[in-house]
Image 1 (tube, rainbow, N blue to C red):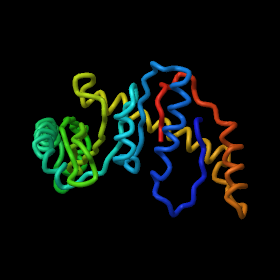
Image 2: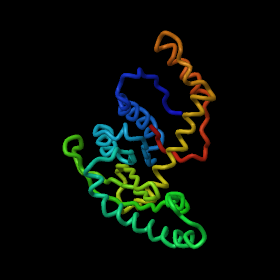
Image 3: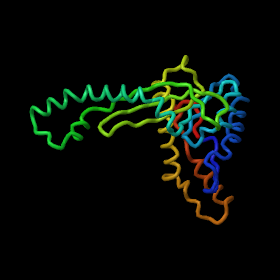
Image 4: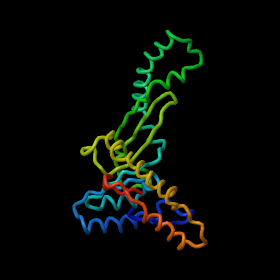
Length: 226
């Protein structure tokens, strides 16, 4: 645990994040100048000031989720079609087999659930109209199954020459979900959500006390999680 900061509920989720990153990374770099740091976070933190600061630092990269939009959907249309074709190609022999054994009637959706989703990844160079100062690498994950297509996006400073889209998403970004389990353990098992006093300072003290008890598995990779 590097920082535990209590904030009021009416502030921007990313408020103060850059300041904390600067402080923490500065302390780390004082001891280990050559260490490579990867910052991971959800879509609340894919902000220009955070990304631009990381890009200005040596040995600091980021992988941040970002919300989808009409442009990203349009540019992923070919990947969606490939995922759909792949899923339907694997679904067809299963459907034919089931038809020889049973009467399908209206149970086509149940048959579709027998076939795993088709998952495809793609990498593109993308820039927003106003909020980003430069083009950045965006990795899109497309899943197509019986319920249609689903898309997820991450923006990263890691170049395609160093890591493929699929490995970046599965090996670098997705493990942050396991880090969220540590936060849930702190909230539920160590009562970090017990902030029922009348002042912010006393509630902050309670948060610090629960944080003091939280120990991370030493096998986890040295990556910063927001």
